Length: 134
Image 1: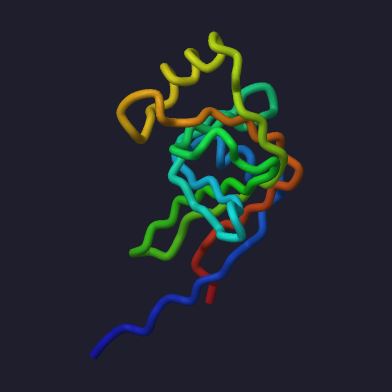
Image 2: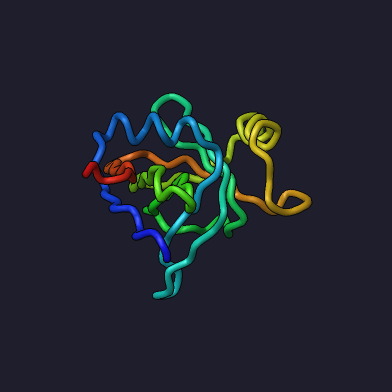
């Protein structure tokens, strides 16, 4: 005899809470469109001065806008959260600033192949995944 699966629900959280959840994490995915194809790159990030700084193995010629997605889901319990930030991207070109972020954010490839980007949040959405109360 098996036990029935737990009832699960998604609860939308405020933009401020979604930003707080992202700030507590360091790993996410940068999503953008390149040559009419959706590209997803693993990334590391940090919040600084109201902007999301992202280190990702992407070409320096990324589009002007992108989406950044972070989640922390516990598969066994079906609980956790997911958050998404969308906005304008800038490539970090200042050598001193780039050196700082290359030291503080772990890269994905050996050498200077990662791109450092600054995402200016325009929209922030998030959801908490929880068990439905009976």
